[in-house]
Amino acid sequence: MLSTGALRAHLLAARLAGPVATPRETSLRSYRLFAARDPRVLLGLDPERVWGEPELLRLMADKCGVSDDPGHVSGPDVIDPERTLAALDAFARCLGRAAERRAPVLFGTGHPHRLLGFYAGLADALSAAGCAVLTPAQGRCVDITTRFGVRTYNLDYVQGVALVREPGVRAPGSATGAHTHSPLPVRAVLEEAVESRGVLPELVVGDHGWVCGAGQLGIEAIGLADTDDPALFVGEAEGRVSVAVPLDDAVRSDYYRPLTRYVLNRACLSQ
Image 1 (cartoon, rainbow, N blue to C red):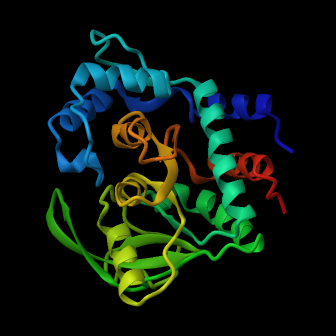
Image 2 (image 1 turned 135 degrees about the vertical axis):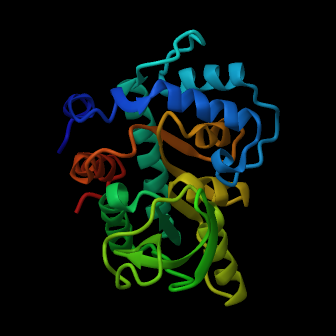
């Protein structure tokens, strides 16, 4: 069993929290774009209130522990590990409640190279607890606007976790995929479930557009978010995202394994 103290030490050593690799300049740029309602950083969220840059900075300081000083404009950003631990505990409680009622769950990631293993471990545990881990719209095409123009991707599932990949890049089922912030994949998955009269998820677990896209549609959603992803924390503040866990979402994939163990233990789902 991983103690809170041991996980705190791991968060700092792996730079999942504390000074992280996300530059302050990148975070501030995201806050500016969010305040301007740029779709690239809204991640499918339609904020109910006006969020200016000062309000966003205060929110991110409260939720993540970043500096609230607008004059601090360079260097690494900082995440308070205590906030990460508190959010992981809330995240675990949501998973535990889903397991208790055997709720259907959807997992999806825009960071498959880094976070696939984290979500796959959770999906396996919830499946063992009697939850249906949903996999609708396998192979469906999704057109996503990127900095290179509109690209077509295919939806795929690896170990119960949804991701998108460019056609022909890898065989279906391989553990790689494209990095995306788009909410279009989760919309396509939910649309397919409705059209086929299938089961809709009661909980969506993931990051980026998977969380905000689901939350915007009224489905309970929880996920991980970096300091340059204000949409998840705004969604949490406005009540459309249940839990947003602040941490660096782009470190080595094996650094997330202790988080999986910690969350499953807290959710009473350790196998």
